[in-house]
Length: 467
Image 1 (cartoon, rainbow, N blue to C red):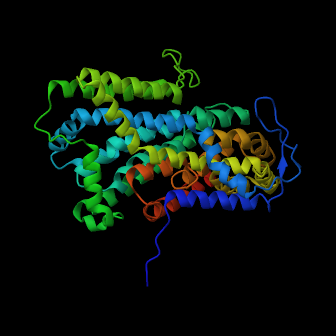
Image 2: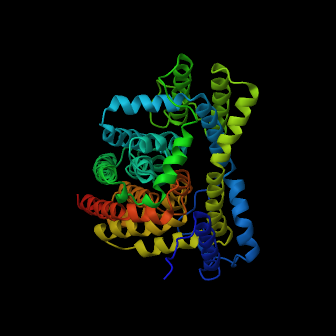
Image 3: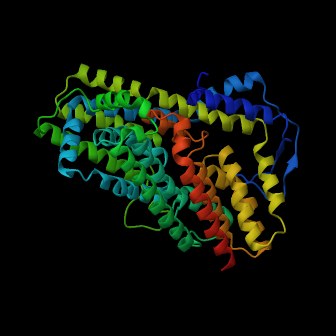
């Protein structure tokens, strides 16, 4: 009997678009009334004329998704071009050889260190799409150290993911949700910090145990069938240079390389929203970040004394490497396009509002948490979900004797868990595309961890509702 093979990410996303389009013919259409800033007004939901999505709408949705996600797609292509120029210098290859040699068999310590760094980024400024830039850098390091692509992807995806799940002062999740809920950003901070520490510790243990198995026996890898191919592929990402030490020009290139990433991280942190006035808030987003990586590629090429033709060709080649990722992100946005055009997004929110009315504190908190799970699948953007749901969900807490901050934490937990594996997340699908990890293999690897933190978060939320 021939083994059934899981379809590619592209097919999975198109299938979801079709299913959601069918749902627009089944789920009643409806809308809330909205404030000028886009905030829905609780209690104003009303059914409206249906707008079932047709075959034409399904075909056009991915392209509209590209329009909506063009800033992210261009950012990814610019990162690819930047890395292509960097690989041409051979500096990363030489640098990685030096790292592996200096670790002297202690490569496993990269896992907790990097996961903690990415978690800090996730909890403070919602580091998610920005992590895409780090995969082409981290993957070759872990492959060269004897691990597999699943280990490398999980270090970034789970690290930043649990950081966002346990957002403490993340303005894109906690900040927006707190604003619409009418509470301070600091309300519920202790609970969110506990969730962050607990889930990060569990994530590190989970990844380190898997990594140790792969290190001792490559056959334990979920992508062992791609073992030789991945070694060749990710070795190629390091460039064609064999390292015989690191030259002065390569050292300068590495310093510039690190500087670009540090500028990126600093530029997206909203210090002003976090109450920090000493440091200026740049407020950069994908347009500015794309320009940063483009300029960075040119500067590194000039400093390394590459010719104009070498800079251009290596930039284009690097962008080609990440073109598939840009396609994935555009198609995934098509799901939201179908939902919004079919007028079912508000209906799903209304069902949640109706289910939560009149329950006691524990039941309210758990139901709130559970309702945000499917909502997070359909609306993977934490800021988008917060904007749509908080004006409706948060006031219901007052009738159940629960603090509104607990609604925010329940929302963060649900959204954070789903965005570790949902195919509707451009970050997840983009990461897997870069890491060459088939979606079904990622599900196989992550499912136990997802179920574990689902239960842990439910327990912590229930306990908090009783305090």
